Length: 582
Ligand code: ADP
Ligand code: TZD
Image (cartoon, rainbow, N blue to C red; front, side, top):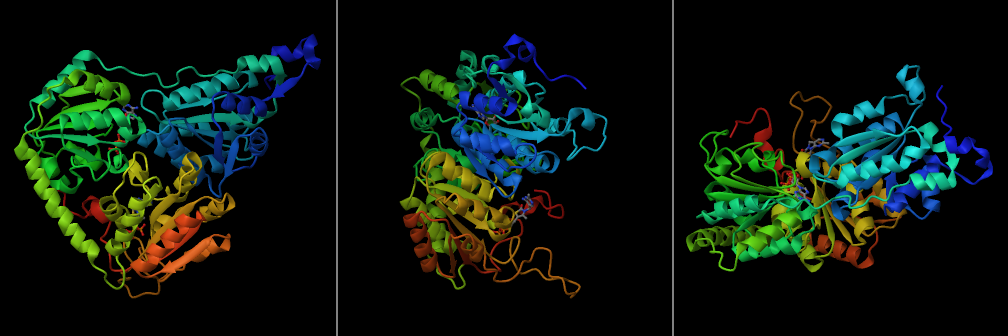
């Protein structure tokens, strides 16, 4: 077996104070101002959680690692510092892996730190406690993956993990720390010298002047220009530069889901209420921190004015992104601007000049007309008060509450509960709306609630489908334990999408999409000392939400809505294999 004793510990200074692996991990995190760990204790990291707390880190313990991982991922998005998730080996690691992949896919900086079993036994497959080659498994799902075997390498391991997570396109990083590492001791002074305070972890990446000029040339040629803001733009915290560019050019913009509020949704240049008109009509589209993935129909097909589902609509694209590989991923990008969004938008603003021509008035008028019409139509729907309550009448209340509380963090998941909320509930400030992201994943809910409350100190409002809530529902205990100001609203229609499917055989099992009818989710919150409320009308919902926000107490509002409300898969029905391709 290889020795783990470093040279310094075997010199005549052996009596000098020593430090150990646990302490070095904590010191390295603190040195880099990482002050929060989201995790779940157990062998071999229980003492790491205890000692981290003793050393002043905030250690938030969850009931399932997946939720701790989602919390870490969104903390990374909100703070630009890697969110740290700490798990035990094999099963705990695997539970955290979903969130690691989610962070990588969504470009959120996160570090999954997992304890692991003894290398010698794992590599010979001799059946250790929770044996698993975690590093190999994490690699394809992470932006980078590292293992530290010696205490004197902990400083480098943490530094590399931080740099990999936040530099360039952010992503998830895996850090494998075998059990034996934690107990290794080395001379305390020597140990201190091994730690690295990372200098400039996410260096600015300045775009080339010719790329900026080319982008403005292409934009200037437009008759019907459009800007699309994505969550990369929200992440970049370049709110002032982005707003200045949008307003100085006068170009209408569409926010992607998590970019809502980057400029207030009520901004007169927002084309969100005319989305299905502007996408096929626009002739030059500028993407800012948004990918042309499925969420934008790959830049092709009928959505974009193409004839078939793979047909390019003829638009020109400008793409501002930190990843040089992103351009041309789906359709031709005529003007890639590669750099960090803050630097890119600053350069674009500087190059705009005083006399930038506003977009043609006909284009703006056509958008305004659609917007006015669609807003009026929606207002009519929202004003209805059907019995039973449906998505719209419930969300009309949520819309008012968010308007009155624009600083509140807003978590959202579900299918219809997601799609309707996104289009009905306006956001007024940047980085308030956090949701299912690039994969449309269910299960982010309660982890996001915890991290949003902890990372921002703000009230959190979560709008959850009843199925969506179930993926992380046990974390209401965590929310109560830490007494977080979280108000969860479950739009309960008794099932996945809705609650009306029937088993065609007439057998005793209900259909796969159907849950227990009239389930009383609010009792789950009451079980842990929080406030549970069952509501059936918009007036009751309003009162319950107002009470929750006033009291800042953990609250779960079970809003019973019409079980026939909603559509299969919400807005993405067309992605079901049996649906006809667009
Ligand atoms: P959305 O889902 O909102 O459309 P995506 O997740 O598809 O957004 O796209 C985000 C894009 O933003 C990614 O291509 C990523 O490389 C880019 N990005 C993330 N952070 C930055 C940054 N600081 N500067 C520039 N681009 C960034
Ligand atoms: N599993 C995971 C991890 N992510 C998923 N997206 C799904 C399954 C499939 N799925 C959706 O895409 S939405 C959804 C599932 C199970 C739940 C929809 O039901 P809901 O919302 O009650 O949350 P609505 O408002 O009733 O549609």
